[in-house]
Length: 122
Image 1 (tube, helix red, strand yellow):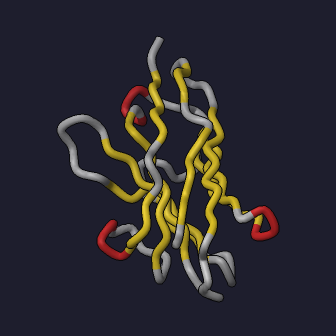
Image 2 (cartoon, rainbow, N blue to C red; image 1 turned 30 degrees about the vertical axis):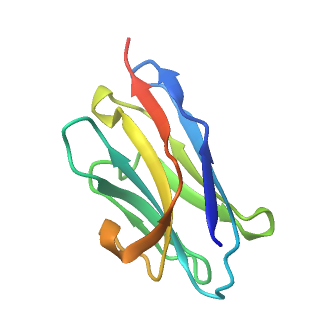
């Protein structure tokens, strides 16, 4: 059974930084992707970033390019999302999920964590 646990969310001022962690277990696949998604109140869940377990290929939403960086530590079964220059519009619950390929569509992912709240406010 695949399990994912997010951590690292919190309250930060505009322009600040946070690093989210997604620790996963139970993955028996040699190839998978880990994606980060976010959902703000009243909005649909959107893909933020994703990374492949093998070749390191990545995806970034246009809204976060140049500010967010995704990375992985396969030995620790953990994927990170470094978020810099945060803006109030980044406020959302952030989720990580496992999927078959790097893709921004949430329907490509089948196991999800419980989410961690990120609030950007002065």
